[in-house]
Length: 575
Image (cartoon, rainbow, N blue to C red):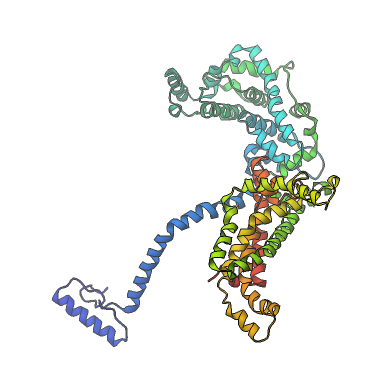
């Protein structure tokens, strides 16, 4: 290892010896042909350090903007992409059912076994207590109509199963109708003491409530009862802020006690609290007069559709945490046990909406081009005073609310509106034959062309204003006609403005939903209207995200095609 005092590259403080060593080191580098900075360090290293400082400084300057873009643009897109495949609601709400369905062959046409029905009883009961079963039903109803009502009915009807056992246990001993015996049987003694102390303080701060702990060994003796009581205790503490020592357990806890006792739980060896009560319950369950409930039959009593194999096939198909179902629905297809298939003809709406959106956006773009080009040409070639006045008129619509402008077109285009009245007054149409120009594609095209026209005029004008006028005069002096001079000389130079305006207008048009919603009716709405519906009304965010993702992909593909055909480098906003 070289000592720092002798290494010519590691110079110490400004002592005479160090200065001498620095001079020697500089001389050696000079002999090796290295260029040196003023301080004697290699120029390459000094430049790299300076560039690194500049990059860090530049990064710090743009960091706020970069963070803003990440939060407001990138993050929502990533969230949209995730929501389009995320499907955790089924597995999270029905964890036991989805696990049991993995062993069921859904292609046989037979209903699943008893293990699935028992698991569904537990999952749906717990979900109903947490008010989650309707959300799950709504999610699955997108895939199979009618499932929502099944879960809504079951949330109320499955309570009857536990009540059958609850009534019989309470008839045996009234203590089964009280909260404390259950807590003593299943809860840890230390937890009971801490919970009782919390109860005695008038149930103050919920954050100080002791977390529920099961009695040691009770899970081995009564596994299902212990699991259901834990669900009850945790929900009572966390969600309701109440004490399990003062609340009677859910009816399903009684049903699970029956299940454990009928499965041969060795309660005879149990010597803990409430041993006599538990042993008496075991004798009751063993009695031939004890009434039991067939879970499968109870589901059918709630709704016969539970015995429809397609219901269970749908639950199994959408039990994975991630699914392609939203994207399939977006292209009018669906998952089935036999694979992917298209929906029936009368159910295919999204393909039609995508085609309509593309077609009408293109028509609106071309309409804006045809109307904007002569206006931009006049603005670019008129005297500055006149051009400025006309520019104010172009920008005037921006001073008016979008809703006001759209509503104005609704008034003007209706059959009793201004335009029809003028046509009737001129005798061009009869009073009984007024034109239908609203609540259709024509109304949407007219209103959106008017709204997006300034976005086409401004890019065109900014490019045309930079075209030297003497180019056209030179062409005419060489014998070209007015049309030839325009088409061969002026128009090619204005194409970048057309390209910039077209991209701007098309992207804005393809995502519009307010104007089509007001003036489009049933035939003039866009796919964006359906996306807005699923976000705000049906709350099917997964399908909305999938539709949005497809729309984004279509825009990117068209942008790529435009770049290949025209060249994005040719698009400019003047200069």
